[in-house]
Amino acid sequence: MTIELPPGASVAETQRVTGQAVAILRAAPEVQQVFEDAPRPGFASLTITFKPGGERSRTSGEFERAYTPQLQAIAGARISFRGQTDNP
Image (cartoon, rainbow, N blue to C red):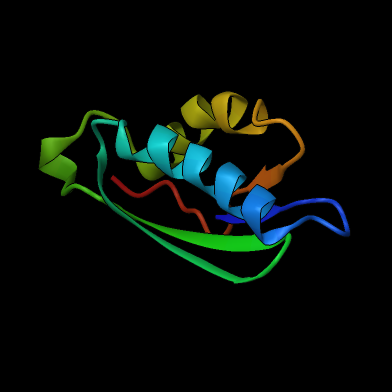
Protein backbone atom coordinates (compact mmCIF):
# COMPACT_ATOMS: atom_id res chain seq x y z
CA MET A 1 0.00 0.00 0.00
CA THR A 2 1.26 3.47 -0.76
CA ILE A 3 0.45 6.79 0.85
CA GLU A 4 1.11 10.00 -1.03
CA LEU A 5 0.63 13.52 0.29
CA PRO A 6 0.64 16.79 -1.66
CA PRO A 7 4.00 18.31 -2.62
CA GLY A 8 5.57 20.18 0.29
CA ALA A 9 4.10 17.90 2.95
CA SER A 10 6.16 17.90 6.12
CA VAL A 11 7.69 14.94 7.93
CA ALA A 12 5.21 15.51 10.77
CA GLU A 13 2.24 15.46 8.39
CA THR A 14 3.54 12.30 6.73
CA GLN A 15 3.91 10.65 10.14
CA ARG A 16 0.41 11.74 11.20
CA VAL A 17 -1.28 10.37 8.08
CA THR A 18 0.79 7.17 8.12
CA GLY A 19 -0.08 6.66 11.78
CA GLN A 20 -3.78 6.99 11.03
CA ALA A 21 -3.59 4.41 8.25
CA VAL A 22 -1.54 2.02 10.37
CA ALA A 23 -4.05 2.30 13.24
CA ILE A 24 -6.96 1.45 10.92
CA LEU A 25 -5.12 -1.54 9.49
CA ARG A 26 -3.86 -2.89 12.82
CA ALA A 27 -7.40 -2.80 14.21
CA ALA A 28 -8.63 -5.08 11.41
CA PRO A 29 -9.13 -8.68 12.57
CA GLU A 30 -7.59 -10.03 9.34
CA VAL A 31 -4.25 -8.27 9.86
CA GLN A 32 -1.33 -9.90 11.62
CA GLN A 33 1.27 -7.12 11.15
CA VAL A 34 1.80 -3.81 9.38
CA PHE A 35 5.28 -2.62 8.42
CA GLU A 36 5.79 1.01 7.52
CA ASP A 37 8.48 2.78 5.58
CA ALA A 38 8.46 6.55 5.05
CA PRO A 39 11.65 7.24 3.10
CA ARG A 40 10.85 10.90 2.45
CA PRO A 41 8.29 13.54 3.41
CA GLY A 42 5.02 13.09 1.55
CA PHE A 43 5.40 9.39 0.80
CA ALA A 44 5.07 6.15 2.76
CA SER A 45 4.80 2.50 1.94
CA LEU A 46 2.94 0.01 4.13
CA THR A 47 3.27 -3.75 3.92
CA ILE A 48 0.38 -5.73 5.36
CA THR A 49 0.82 -9.29 6.58
CA PHE A 50 -2.51 -11.08 6.79
CA LYS A 51 -3.36 -13.87 9.19
CA PRO A 52 -3.47 -17.31 7.57
CA GLY A 53 -6.55 -17.96 5.43
CA GLY A 54 -8.09 -20.27 8.01
CA GLU A 55 -7.95 -17.51 10.64
CA ARG A 56 -9.78 -14.82 8.68
CA SER A 57 -13.11 -14.49 6.95
CA ARG A 58 -12.07 -12.32 3.97
CA THR A 59 -9.67 -12.69 1.09
CA SER A 60 -7.09 -9.96 0.59
CA GLY A 61 -9.20 -8.53 -2.26
CA GLU A 62 -12.29 -8.42 -0.06
CA PHE A 63 -10.23 -6.74 2.65
CA GLU A 64 -9.04 -4.10 0.20
CA ARG A 65 -12.59 -3.35 -0.95
CA ALA A 66 -13.84 -3.17 2.65
CA TYR A 67 -11.10 -0.86 3.98
CA THR A 68 -10.48 1.42 1.00
CA PRO A 69 -13.29 3.87 1.96
CA GLN A 70 -11.95 4.26 5.53
CA LEU A 71 -8.40 4.79 4.34
CA GLN A 72 -9.38 7.22 1.60
CA ALA A 73 -11.23 9.29 4.20
CA ILE A 74 -7.89 10.31 5.77
CA ALA A 75 -7.64 14.00 4.91
CA GLY A 76 -4.88 15.10 2.58
CA ALA A 77 -3.68 11.65 1.57
CA ARG A 78 -3.94 9.55 -1.55
CA ILE A 79 -3.85 5.93 -0.45
CA SER A 80 -3.78 2.96 -2.77
CA PHE A 81 -3.28 -0.77 -2.53
CA ARG A 82 -0.78 -2.33 -4.89
CA GLY A 83 -0.08 -5.85 -6.03
CA GLN A 84 -3.24 -7.30 -4.59
CA THR A 85 -4.64 -10.61 -5.67
CA ASP A 86 -7.71 -12.19 -4.26
CA ASN A 87 -5.80 -14.60 -2.03
CA PRO A 88 -7.69 -16.61 0.55
